[in-house]
Length: 122
Image (cartoon, rainbow, N blue to C red):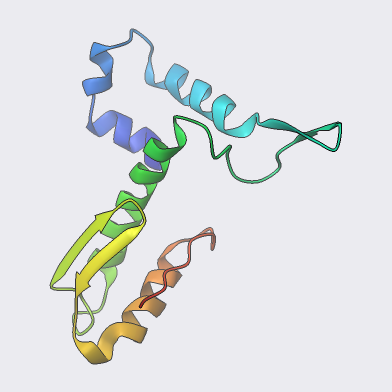
């Protein structure tokens, strides 16, 4: 749903293809869910996640993380809301009150409904 919403909001991709959104989503689902690999001479189908070598994976991850971050910041209680939030790939720079680090991290880890993404701090 996040990718679909993103495709509807930003339609710049239409300048490079005549495919409809449903076609793009079907192809994306096929690409992300049909990953096979060979291990010890046997062919296996990957059950969870996507192929790390997939050229589409960084784009999908970035779109999802942007959605997750926007939702997390919008729903953060005012006393722990960051004053600054910048991210690059898998690193985040944030400016928050020193005593809010654990509370904000706990909040961030509750926003992802899949439970697959875990925020940590250093």
